Image 1 (tube, rainbow, N blue to C red):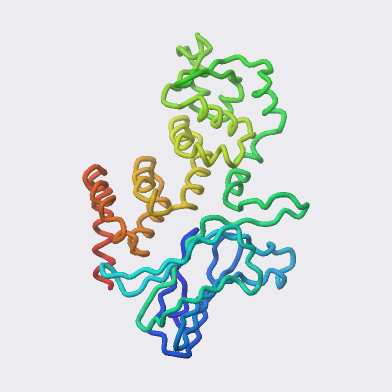
Image 2 (cartoon, helix red, strand yellow; image 1 turned 90 degrees about the vertical axis):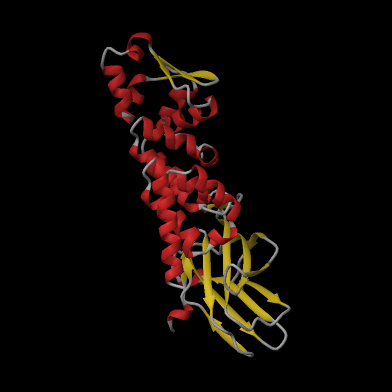
Length: 330
C-alpha cells in the first residue's frame, strides 16, 4: 500500500485523506491505533453512493486480546480544503458494540474530488467479563496506573474514618483532617513545611485557599491511594495545579496523560494555555497538532481571535509559526 492509505491519528481523533475516488472503486486504509485496538477505515463508491466503513481488528486473532470495542464516536466527511470546506456529519453513534462487520455509513451522494474521512471517538469501553457494566478505557486507565500502586487500601480508611489524624487542611469552602506523615512522604513541599519551624508546623494547619473542598478531597484521595476515575476526571485542572504547587511529579504526569486523551474543539485552546503555564510539552504538541495538522484552526476563528488577544505572546508566536509552516506545506 502507498502513503495514501495511511491514517493520521491522535489519541481520540483519526483523519484519512483520500484522493479522487473513481466510480466503482474500493480502498482500505492501513491500520491505526486508538485505545486498545488497531482500526481500519475503508471507502467504496458506486454511481449512487459513497460508503464509509470503520472496523476494529478481529480480537479473536490475538490470544487474550481485548474484546470487541463498545464505541461512541462522531463521523464526518470533509470535502475540499479550508476555507471553502464542505462538511457532511453523521449523527453521533453511542455505545455501539463494533462487531467484525463494523460501522457502515452510506452517503447518498457521489463524492468525486479529494476528501477527508474523520472519526472522533467520544468514548471506548470494554465489556465486563463478570457481566457488569462496560468500563471506559479512558476513565480509569491512567489513574489506576498512577494511584492504585502507590498506597495500601488501609490508607483510605485512615483518611475517611479520621483515624489518628493530626493536621487540618483549610480549603476555600471548608476543611478536612489528614496525617502529616502521609502528606510529607508524598510531597517534598509538605515535608519541608512540617520539618521546619513554619506556621503549618506550629498551628497544625495547612491553608489551600485556591482549592475547593471537593477538589481538596480528590487531592487527598489521590495521596491516600483511593481516587476514583470519575472524581479524577472532574478535578483534573485543580489536581494539576496542586501537583505543580506541591511538587508531586506522579500526579502531574497522570493529569498530563489524561488531558492529552480528550482534546477537542471545545477545550483545545484552554488546554494549550494550560500546557504553557505548567510546562507540559506533550500536551502543547498535541494541541498544536490538533489545531494545525488536523486543520481545526479554520473551524474556530472566533475562539482563536479571543485567544490571540489574551494568551502569552510566546504561545501566540508558536501557534502562528505552526499555521505558517502548514500553509507552506500545502
